[in-house]
Length: 552
Image (cartoon, rainbow, N blue to C red; front, top):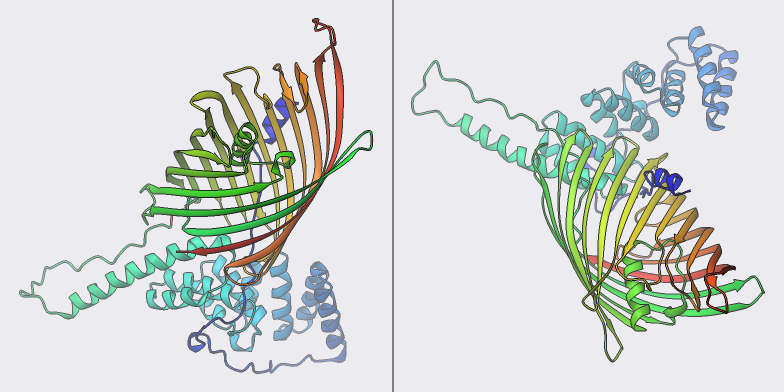
């Protein structure tokens, strides 16, 4: 089982998608779309008109293969019927046959007759064929107020950048206000590089406009600036303040039908301040320095069971249980560097640490957690993968208690502008410096998830998970002393969030988990003989939370 989890731990996926929203102070001067004239060539017969309607019905029913067949039949009988060409191109676009789609759109002499959706599809097919002039024309045919306006601005900005029209690229990037989160970083990089090249271009034009002191015939003209490749960056600095109140109702039901309900109230204040040095060249390293300060308060959290906690949460809960504290204060610092080792591929290292101090106790005992890690990240059109290895140490009250090696893999796949799928795997191994410390020896997890939504607006995700845990030391497991234990957990989790404003999110999380745990405990005579006890538990959880955040 451990080998299986180690293999599964190399794969993972989490993704976030945005829906472009219309208008937020966007000028329409760059995107003024003329009125759409009707196609002049009509269908030659009622039979062809009926064939066209059948093709439209198939397209609207998302039977794109049938639509391709019907529109192709029509064009064989009347090759100059422009609406059929447009609809055939659109059906090919939905089937991701972009080269054929692009060739058909090229046969439309006047793209002003295109509606916004086919205009965007023409732009995308031309963009993928490196025909940036036609891509720019098509993207600029999408009017302000249309849901695809922001995405058309983003890709139109790149097309203008590729042609050296840096001022136009900057204007279009500024108009692309609401974008999927995966595009925001590249938008900032393109915009920053366009601003740099525009200044360089303006200086060159000014220099060329001033006659030289000596006009030598053999003088060599200055070389045109060479566009550097755009490196892929995985790391990004965080600069924000977050306030997160949370209220949770949790219920535990055991095999003997005993049920315990717990009310948990918690609040967290987080301050993140980061600096980064982001070079635009492919080979230059990218540096990040991050500082985080947190303050958390808890009421009733001592009996709370978490589903799939991450490393930071596990470390904090261990300290809270050791102290019986009701609050926790933390300070963390991290430095990281990454290199672009290939197109869309990044390799990085990070080193840092955290200090945790509990509050509300007479003799608080703090913890120090050093950490070092390495990662490999890759991203192309709709797919992103990350492999990470992190190593943590845990020093409690001046004594080294245990170390934790954590292997994580993620794979992200975006199917549309709204839907994301993912699979995540993780393997954690623990090495203890003392015998009687609660916790596993190793732990494997698999999480699958489907998400829908946008960065600003409604977001939801539904996931299923499975976890295997084993421990082989003599320690306390709850109220029972055991020599070894193992457990399996599986369940499902639903989360929904809604952005009230750009700085306030409201949401809830609900999950249910079936955990079966068995432990080998000494018998009553304390001899070497032992007996195995089973502790099945069903846990349900419902949490309401508010996230108030602002960047600086």
